[in-house]
Image (cartoon, rainbow, N blue to C red; front, side):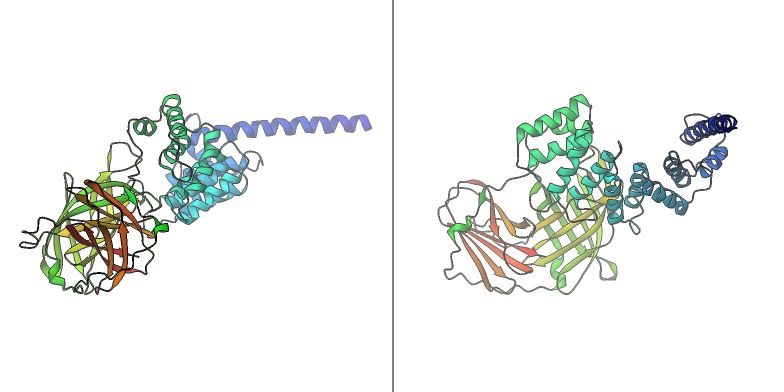
Amino acid sequence: MRKKKFLFLAFMSVLSMVARAQSSEDYSLAMDVLKGKTDVKSRQWAIETLENCQDSVFRPRALNTLGVAYMRGLGVEPDTVKAVSCFETAGQLGCVSGYYNLGMYYKYLPREKQDFSRALSCFEAGMKLESNGSDVCAYDAGFMYYKGLGCQQDYTKAVELFRKGAVKGLSYCKYMIGLCYRNGYGVEQDSDLAKAYLEDAAFRHSYRPAILELRRNEPEVISPSYIYDMDGGLDVETMPVIDPVTFTPNEIYGEYNGLLLTYDWSGQKIVKEQPLSVAMWKGQNDNIIGKWILGDDTLDVTSTISENGILSFSDTEIEAYERYCGKDKVKYAIDKLLVSNVCNCLTGELRLYSLELSEPDRPMFVCLSKDVDGINVDDKYSCKIYAYPVADNQHFEVRFLLPEDTKQNVVCLYSQMGTPVKRFKIGELHAGKQTIQLPFDVSSGNYVVMVKADQYHGNSIINKK
């Protein structure tokens, strides 16, 4: 009797294994059908097969594949609600691709619905899973920290996450680590390590951005020529008096020339400077019509102005080179362009939003001075200077050109009403381009910056958030 019972149980076990094997084959085939690898069965059959999947091994992958099908409308009507539900459940059951696809969904939603914070949470959840795919989520999480999307920008954290993917051989992680070593982002600047990572990504993996980066002669960071020595203390001698700055909206019209400065993602270092020309005149309905000329590109803009001198620009598209797309131009929308007008100068922050990458570009700063007839025409010692914030608004830089060496050099900082705020005594300067970095430990607002270098002089404005 026991022998018969044993044979019966063994027989049922074999039948169960056969059934399970057949089901496994069906599930694999269904996933291949929806992925377009075969057409031996219909997509409708594949959808029904995966929806009925209860196998603990295949169910997470089946749900992720269903999520893709509902998102793209493969064999079913598109349904983002069902797609999101499938991705969430797949991730919770241990499928890295479920979290990854969910993160990409939140990251690339239309701008008004985009959710970088939820995208980052999904990438971090996928990264924690012990799986061969978790290194991909580590890269995407690292990229969010690198740019500060949905989180506090943090190069150190980004490098830590990129290393997880680099260990697994991901070319784009090696490329990003190479960039960080080359520019000192989150790590000590090291040209040898930078070259090693970039060459690995370029030559072992044929990763195009790494190949292009190796063709650059220098790091992207533009270093200041002079950094003020805080240990030297501030000179508090009596400062010259300037007239209070006033502003009326009509003063905004005219032509300006200056610089557009691009910062790294932390906002602490300048990585690019471009000549910028602006012309503005009165339009209809009290708005302002203008042209912004940046290199070979001309951008037509429409804006309005508030009583305190803040220009607000309507959405405008522009084409520009993107850091991670090689030499190709991509389309941007002006996300924010707020400029303060003081003392015949324009200054303020410009933010662009990539329409192709669906994310903000690095912060920029507009630094312009107005071309005014009859002013300083006979003053051969007048210098055009530019001032802009760096190091997350804890420092500012002053840029100007000296025709000759100078010995007595000072930079003065005044409030908009002409009240003295700071006075920095600078050492001897040699002829040529000057980029001087100074502490900016003041309250938020607009400030007038005045430079005196022997007989040479000039002034600009700067605003602190």
